[in-house]
Structures are given as structure tokens and as C-alpha cells.
Length: 294
Image (cartoon, rainbow, N blue to C red):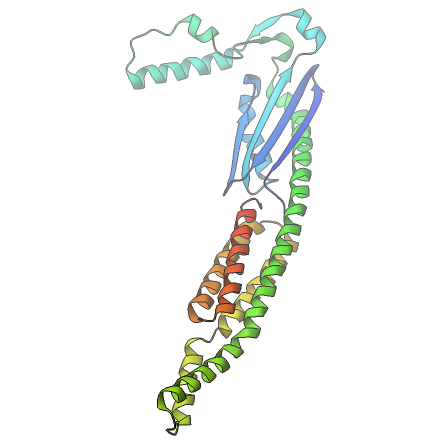
């Protein structure tokens, strides 16, 4: 089953006396891009969290936010402690910025205390590795709800894509059925035109057949139709396989576009041209929908 890249997931739990909330939302993206917003006490877990998310998703821009909310007791206590490792990190970055930009202004206490999470509630100042076990489960729960929503969106996408693919197949078979008639009609029109121009003169039937054969060879679209049918079969298979199908389907749509362009260029028949236009229209809609497949 295919999955959409659009979705939302949320989970919350009490860890070490404080409420942790994980929210995740994802949108279309060519590759996997993970954006994290973490409280200062969890910054050291940035790489570990991204790795865990990357194990579950292959495409899409995923924005994940972890919030730490105080319970009533902690808020009323109002006791704070200094997050010294974070303050040192802020100071080091300020020193680097000052050196890079050759700034003369001194780094002051007021600057450092103005940054987020330099002072934190005493109860929240814990070793991130202690919190990781519970936080990992919370992250998994948020990813599960996100994946479920992406799967539901994927089901809707699959129904729409299947319907449009069936329409394209119908238009293609109409072209395949019309193709032999085009040659016969060309032969008839050519013969009528020659008789109109030559009057009662005897027509060289072998020469007429030769011209028809040349035209038939130039306008033959059998190979394009066979390849197009193969692309439709592969497309259908990918819709059932699901995992990582987005890029492959996008490639197939490009190939379908090339085949139908060749069919349109080879055939000068009005009815075939109408079906070619219909196929191109449906391919454009497919292409737009496929951009949201993981």
C-alpha cells in the first residue's frame, strides 16, 4: 500500500514528573528532511532523534517538536537551576561569532541570561540519557500516529491514481484499435485522390501499395503502445507494493509522457490525436498526485 507524505502525529506522557509533548507533521519533499525543535535540556539528543525518525520514513519534510510542560507542583515551587553546559555552548558560539565578524562589543552576562533555557526548573534539569528511554517510546507513539495518517491519505491517493490509470488504459486501447484503420483510410484517400487527378488513366497498384507501405511504416505506433501497456502494468504493481514507490512511479509517468508524445507525432489521425490529448491531461493529474507519494 502506498503512503502519502502528508500527515500529523502527536503523543504526550509524564516523564520524571514533567509532561513531555511530541508533535510531528510532514509535507511533500523530494527527499527526507527532518527539522527538530527541542528544549535546551534535550539538545544533545538531536542526532539520536533524527536517526530514529529516519528509520521509519523515507521521504517528506518532517517537522518534529518536543515540548516540556510543568505540572502544577513544579510550577508552584518556582525553583530554578543553571543549565551550565548550555550556557557554555552559547558563550562559545558568541565568541566564534565575535571573531568571525570582528566585533568589538564584549560578551556580557545580560546577553547570556537572555537566551532560552539558560535557567530551568530544578526538576527538569536532568541527564538527557535518563529521559531517553521514556522519550523514545513517546517519539515512537507520535511516529505511529503520523504513519497511520499518511497511510489513510495513501489509500485515498491510491483510489484516485487507479481510476486515472484505468482511464488512460481505455484511451490507449482506443488508439490501438484505431491505428490499423488509419492505414486503410489513407490507402483509400490516396487512391481516390490519384483517380481524381488522373481521370481514366490506369493506376499503378503496386506503386500505390508501395506508398501506403511507406506511410504505414512511418506512422506505426505498435512499439509505443506495447511499451505504454508495460508501463501501466508496472504502475499498477507499484501501487500495491507501496514502500518507496513515489520516485519509481514518477519515473514511469515521465516514460509514459515520452511514449504518448511519440504516438501523437507519428499519427496524423484526428481521433488518435484526441485520445493523445486525453492521455496527456490524465498524466498531468497523475504527476501532480504522485508528488505526495512517499
